[in-house]
Image (cartoon, rainbow, N blue to C red; front, side, top):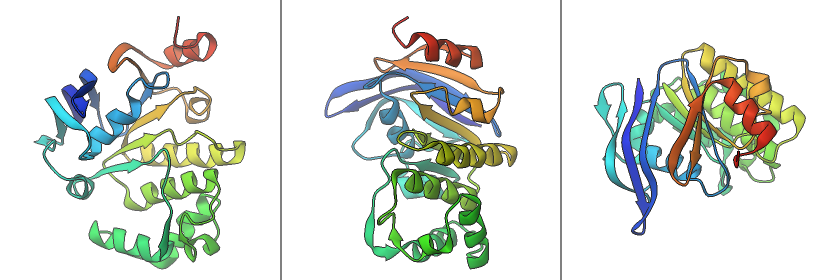
Length: 235
């Protein structure tokens, strides 16, 4: 299980998250929704161990181990993955070289043909692997490449920070397909999003948590996401 217990987080002395609790089992999808500035990305970065985000209180438990003091790369090796809201470009590193090294570091078989097949599954040709990381990629292509990494790594748990923001309809379908495949493999997923539209592509078996002002204000199932889609976060 991936569990967040009474987590409070500050940035430069300002409290940004207060007493967050979350339990994610293998194969479960938990959706974090909330308005801009509610703390969604702060939660994602804190769970991954970004040094800018200071844990004031609480614990982050991954399969029985408290990982809140571990650096980001150690959390990754223990089975935690994150896709970023704004994937960065690395102009001096070919994507295929990057993926081969990441897979090797995480104990996976760096099979080039397999990498090509996964990229093709995400609608990305072999040509993308020969480019530098995310260089010249559209917003949707960057997000699809991030989800391809998730499929290649098969993490125990994944945190997806707004993978549906700024993408077209075709990219949305590829992204939703990757999420469904990861869930079917047993990956537990925390999906951060503003909108319910991606959830229509995923199915009905998920949990929704509304984050506002750094606190969980409401929890429920798909019906809560539908209510937010119709009424917004102010109701």
